[in-house]
Every structure is written in structure tokens, then in C-alpha cells.
Length: 216
Ligand SMILES: C[S@@+](CC[C@H](N)C(=O)[O-])C[C@H]1O[C@@H](n2cnc3c(N)ncnc32)[C@H](O)[C@@H]1O
Image (cartoon, rainbow, N blue to C red; front, top):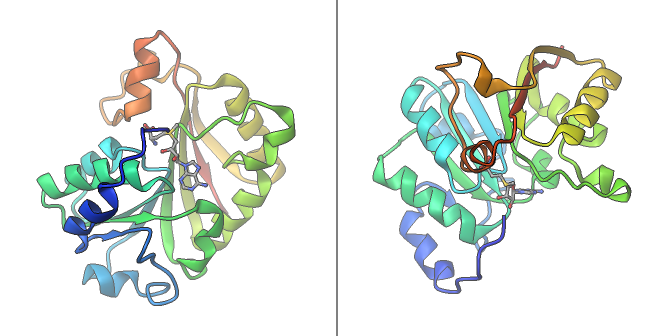
């Protein structure tokens, strides 16, 4: 997601220091293995990969106050928008990190995460870029390491080739895939929380694909 660069955000993001780890104060070794202490309780921990402007994480954190949520987003200017939403709702169960997912093993101990949400990640359509897709097998191995045994990944995308690629990667990694939908919005799914991209692309008439992946 690209926004016009806004230098003022580098200062303004510090308004949210109580729950945001900005670019100049990233989370790392000090937090790794200590997320329960940071949240002040032992609740199941869910991580959203590529949080964007935060519609999903802010809504799920309201709906599931018994769970803690961490949003990881590479672009600080984008995460600022998510932080404003979380602050407006005063959500004690959310932390937001400006961070690159490829380094997420430095943030969590093996087995520290209960579940992952991956919503509308970049499809990297060029064949030579397939290793950058967040469902490529190397990423799946990182998720396997950091998830508890039996942990889940919930995946949504509007991009059919990425969805097919991902299903193949899940199968090659020996993961169990359930609840596969090629047109989520055609189903009665009152539990579905729409993300910014989901609203945009379903508005253009694109079908939304989703599945639930279990890491045995
Ligand atoms: C297409 S947007 C989707 C945003 C949101 N999840 C949604 O569904 O509306 C993908 C987001 O993932 C972020 N992203 C992509 N690669 C990333 C990475 N390696 N680490 C952290 N964030 C990443 C992008 O900056 C962008 O905000």
C-alpha cells in the first residue's frame, strides 16, 4: 500500500507510544517471549501480517476482548492510520509494530503465537518474485516455528492466481486446509470482518477467496 510520504508522521506517531512500536523504536529482543507481560495477562495471542490502515485489527480486537492482537506493518505512514483507529477505540488488547514480516522470528519465541491473520497480502504477480509472496514456503516455515502446534492461519485475498499458488504451497508444506471459499461474499458469513482492500476490491466486483490453514 503506497501513501504519499508524510514526514510529520515520524513525530506524530509518538502520540501512540503506549501501544505502537515505531520505526525509530522497533520491537525486538526485549519484547520477544514477553508479550504476555506487555499485555499484562496470559491471553491467546493473534498476529495480523500486513495490518494496513487497521480496519481489521481494530474490529476484531473489539469483538474478541479476551484475545490479544499484534499488527505488523512495514509502512509507518500506513500504520499511523491504524494507530489512530485503535486509539479512538481505547483498545488495551492491541499493539502495532512497524516491522518487516520477513524478520518476525526476532519478535516471537517458537510457539508464542496462537493464530495468524493474512489479509490481502501483495500478490507479487511476476513469476520471478514468487519468493516474496507471504505464503511462499519459507514464510510458512517461519509461521510454523512461531505458531503453537495446531495454530492457525486465516488467509483472504481477491487474487485468484495468488490463492491457487498459496493452496499449492500449503499442501507442499503438509498443512491442513479447510473452509476454502472462492466467493466468500456469496456465503452468509456474518462473522467476516471486512478489511480496507476487501471493501475496495469487492466493490469492483472481485470475488474474495479465503481459507483456514492448520499447522499440525
Ligand atoms: C495490499 S495491503 C493490505 C492491507 C490490509 N491487510 C487490507 O486487507 O486492507 C498489504 C499490506 O501489507 C504490508 N506489507 C507488505 N509486505 C510486508 C512485509 N514484508 N512486512 C510488513 N508489512 C508488509 C504493506 O505495506 C501493505 O500495507
